[in-house]
Image (tube, rainbow, N blue to C red; front, side):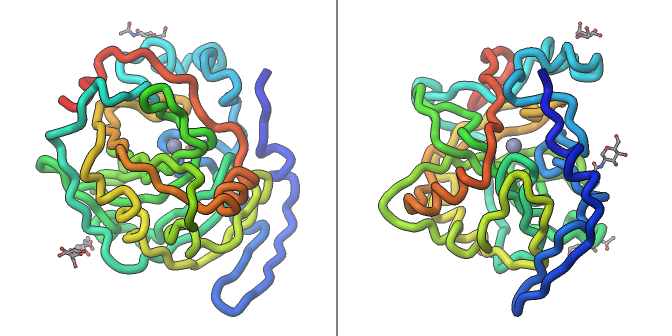
Length: 276
Ligand SMILES: *[C@@H]1O[C@H](CO)[C@@H](O)[C@H](O)[C@H]1NC(C)=O
Ligand SMILES: *[C@@H]1O[C@H](CO)[C@@H](O)[C@H](O)[C@H]1NC(C)=O
Ligand SMILES: *[C@@H]1O[C@H](CO)[C@@H](O)[C@H](O)[C@H]1NC(C)=O
Ligand SMILES: *[C@@H]1O[C@H](CO)[C@@H](O)[C@H](O)[C@H]1NC(C)=O
Ligand SMILES: [Zn+2]
């Protein structure tokens, strides 16, 4: 059984805008381009696959064969038994406040960095001899990666592309409720629900708070993986922070309230070369 979350919305071709002092909430105009494109690989206005049946994705389409016989599929279970990464240490160049669109990718809160055709002007990080550029982020609920058998409430994916725009690396930050509000979440506008096609633009986000909450990835796991949605393309380097970004209880309730189930079943570790 496959649900098709975008069919109904695609029929609602109502264009309405309402201006507010700082940014504009737009309902409708995004529809044409409204695709789950901020998830690595998810690019469809009408998904023929469902997270609830991720073990069967290759039966949906022959194009999804890697979901079944790929050797570096994501996500995987991680633990301190893997040790922590000593190589591929990321160096961030995320300075300042970054303009973009805030919306819901159909499964949870999301943000796309404003793009002027030149990826190399985006915030970036460097590891080894690679520089990758931030395309945007989105939230999965619950978390895709478990650590030591524990699954966080949500997981933030910061998707990065190479200079020609191909998805190359994802920074994953696990989110759990704690005792204090997260400064990163506090700066966001009110959450947009998973069934709401609206966009708030432009907004500016300072990523410093996100990086600080996980101590700039001072401790992390890295491995060779894939997109966590069809067509499950491989060749993505994953960085999973050991630290957790804690949010206030209400903040987490708002994030979860705007989200719907979006975790792929964990894959067996095979040729992932964890921390190598
Ligand atoms: C989404 O997929 C379509 C069809 O494969 C492709 O033409 C389009 O460029 C893709 N969009 C993005 C943003 O990747
Ligand atoms: C993986 O499965 C697909 C579809 O069955 C097949 O075409 C492809 O050859 C397989 N890959 C390998 C390496 O066998
Ligand atoms: C960004 O900020 C870091 C410290 O927060 C600094 O080391 C680095 O030089 C800055 N980069 C740019 C391009 O301003
Ligand atoms: C892209 O942006 C970078 C950094 O801002 C700049 O150095 C480069 O010249 C730009 N490339 C093009 C083709 O505009
Ligand atoms: Zn993702």
